[in-house]
Image (cartoon, rainbow, N blue to C red; front, side, top):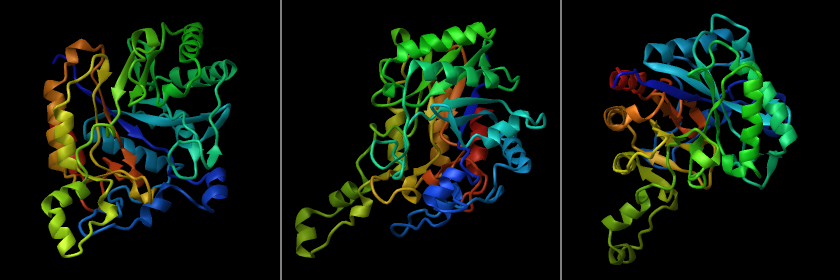
Amino acid sequence: MSKEIKAIAIHLPQFHPIKENNEWWGNGFTEWTNVSKAKPFFDGHYQPHLPADLGFYDLRLEEARIAQENLARANGIFGFCYYHYWFNGKRILETPLERKLKNVKEDFPFMLCWANENWTRVWDGGEKNILLEQKYSHEDDLLHIRELIKYFKDDRYIKSNGKPVFIIYRPNLFPDIKKTIAIWREEVKAAGFSDIYLGYALGEKNQSLLGEGGFDFSYDFQPNFSNRPSSIKNNLFKRYTTALLRKFKWTIDNRYELFYDYEQFVDLQINTEFKSKVYPGITPMWDNTARRKKNYFALHNSTPQKYAKWLKHIVLNYPWQKMPENYLFINAWNEWAEGNHLEPCQKWGKQYLEETYKALK
């Protein structure tokens, strides 16, 4: 491999209060609100996930943002991919990045991923209990790309051969994504770039959007919810026969239903072939029970060593030479309410970051 791997960590900016969240969830709500009140479902369930080195930070503060950048850089992370929120001209959670743009001391590379889902009361991006609805039009496409160009022109913005890299989270929601992409490419070229390097998060409904679909690449969004092992509940049933369960009137708690063993999940991903034009992705851990009491998804018993096994497999076996860049997307830097973070926690300290550094270097 001739080029260094560029590990890009997904970054959530919802760690400061905003007017909308105050109205929906109560004054002072931030991501920490759900994180701090999480409870374990059973013995051995790792909750709550509480921060260590960086503490309960507020991303309006320069000191907090710089501390994140310094920690990431020191542990082999190339840049952050910030979730970007746009609702027909309305911006949400934009303050941390807006302040970074004005501060030359925050020199860490960054890019954007448009989290183009509805905001809902149940945190699922669906069509019920909508707080902010995502609507699409070609007029909005034009307005949006013109707003994005100011970020693309920043020297710190991540580019591939001079082309700003931009990702759409849910391209399947667009009524005419090809037309949207055509509008964007035309505007980006008019702004002085040769083109845009456009990608999307690969998911169950986003399988055929490369090439003629208009996109240049996708990345393997992890966890891959469609490629999962048997749940812990099913494994418990296998351990105790049905007859034995009936005899002693035992039941297996339904709270185990949507818990999956992290190592079994990792083995499934390792044994899945890499896809053409799809950059690799990985998650150190995942447990969104802090956000959801129903329809959650949890990878149980993650450890830094099990994560390192998966990461080393990607580093050594991904066909890097077939792609124009060596991007590796890590989900996530700080999704604390989804139990999904490289940032140090009180249980593991810096071990996930240390394993990341060792595998990449």
